[in-house]
Image 1 (cartoon, one colour):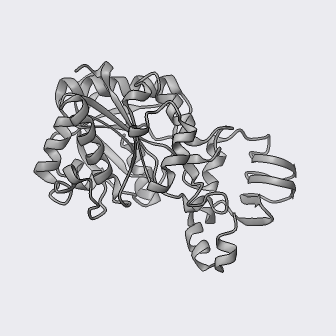
Image 2: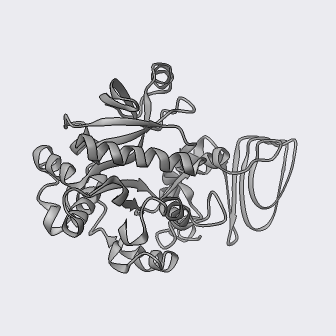
Length: 339
């Protein structure tokens, strides 16, 4: 099977509690229009359609989201929207997906895995990197993370250190580094490290062989699709395998992980404010405002997040917006569930 017959796997589980009060278990962030006027998952599916048709697209999600996702993406066959028995990390999710693809299309099928909640500035560049990785995976019989060229030293991401080049664009992996501090992140960016984006490409047979060899905590779940101890695919397989190569991509990728991240991916006004809804600003800079009702006026403030929805108003700082789970856990149930 050639790289042009690739399958796409979209990980679309989770709640996204850092987007409270907008994101809820019934309407998590991947189903919300946070970057464009369409849900993140719809943007992701459209971005990938030139890579693989809906018949070769798998969506992995929570059982409670199968019906909403089927309504959002009616072109994806219902049997391709797969409910995980419980959240078990990317290791189990990708092992299940690889086994499903192997059962349907054989071990030589190439699988491209992405998450549903990313922003991508250059769709064509994104697809070009995926196609290159798919071709290289078919040729080299190796596991390929697509490393993103960093646009900033971000301590919230994992990093990949590339090593010697096998051929133009294909390099060995020296090591993975998980979420360094800011000083180390700055040094790694200067040294040519790549962000570990969570984009993975491999032939399913090659990946399943590495699971069997290196990830005993995942192997028992391959056929039964039962829940296992949560573990990431990076820890379970990639960091243990000797068959890992990397391709670099530079296509405006960003993880839409917090309200503060929207400053990087949404259109901003002359003061650097990323706003949605009826918002007026004066002498206000670098704020994020999401107003589903009413009018928000900002005067002389900076680096705030303001969210207005269903009579509830959240005000925090961009910096603290990455820790909303602590806030939500501390709120009375009646406030916590209001969204």
